[in-house]
Amino acid sequence: MVGSAGSVHSGRRIKDKMVGVERYCVVTGGRGFAARHLVTMLIESREWLVRVADLGPEIKLEPYEEEGVLGEALRSGRAQYVSADLRDKAQVIKALEGQRLFSTWLFMINNHKLHYSVNVEGTKNIIDACVECKVKRLIHTSSPSVVFDGVHGTDNADESMPYPSKHNDSYSATKTEGEVLALKANGKNGLPTCCIRPSSIFGPGDRLLVPSLVTAARAGKSKFIIGDGNNFYDFTYVENVAHAHICAEKALSSGGEIPERAAGQAYFITRPMKFWEFVAVILDGLGYESIKIPVPVMKPIAQLVALTYKVLGPYGMPVPQLTPSRISLLTCNRTFSCSKAKDRIFYTPIVSLQEGLKRTIDSYSHLRADLTKREGPSKSYLLLGSGKDMNPFLYVFIFFFHFKVDVWRFLAFCACPVINTL
Image 1 (cartoon, rainbow, N blue to C red):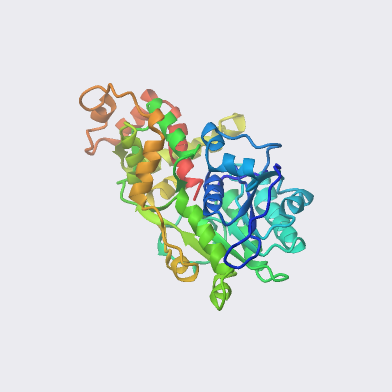
Image 2: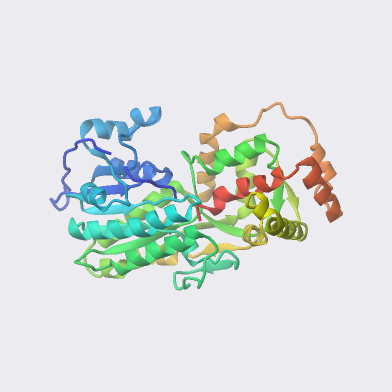
């Protein structure tokens, strides 16, 4: 999940009418995609004073935010912005001073050093600051990637699934270390913690997945589905992600046995759908097309690319994005069960997957394809057999001579926005 660290507006405290106590919270990475929705939901509840923490020296609102809930809350003092780098413990402590709830959203960039400094060292700073500032609850944003080895599929796996002995990327490995730290911190000086694992977050305001798909489509590189298109993946609409965090906070702050059952646990927040159907629904909804390329064709090509890189890598060949393991990832099932979240933090989706897709497509109407499409199937569709089997060598010819090596960049470009938010 994309996040950063944050800056400051003054604000007043809000009292909970039910129990007569102050309720205020910090959302780190608060200017990130999903975090913005959480901030809005917290403000709209009118139960919280919200402190938004992010890296920027000052908050820069979009026009719709200026006129909306966040802009009004900043002006009235019901929200404030604080600049903080999670890698700097002193800044984290400053962001948490006087706060009761801390919800964290961390970086996701392809850089191991940054992954480790934020996902691991940053999480440690958060925990230490929570203890020092006597924060009442910590809800840590994790990912299903912590239990995924990048190769083997999962079918409705639950939270009893162990961490793999080895991850195939630094993001997943460091997110795992961060989650372990957050769960081990449960009960430290009275601090209850839990972790939320949303998968493939999508919705209005996303600046990665949909824009990347559209950019690829406009370049003529969105016509490919790897495999038979029947593998299932989990996706989470962004408002459901925000809602899950609020459910977790309510469970941790409830009376009786509920907090004890909810604390120290991780929770999958997901909804299954065919991976390529999800991509196709968005592209089709915006006026773009897709066709299928069988896995038996793609895997040998990916292996050839990997072999070529071993030979030419030392001479400056870019690291290939299309690899056999990525082909496996794009064609395997990867689904998880939400039963534990429903049972222990009383999570129920507030927006259906279908409605979430509709809202997402509607929010990107400005990225629609030119409505003056040509009639009939495209030349590439006909060339590739109109959906029927064809000679694999023709695929190779088309890839290297018609689409050139850009096809490798496209496949990563098209797939990575979904994969990297898992």
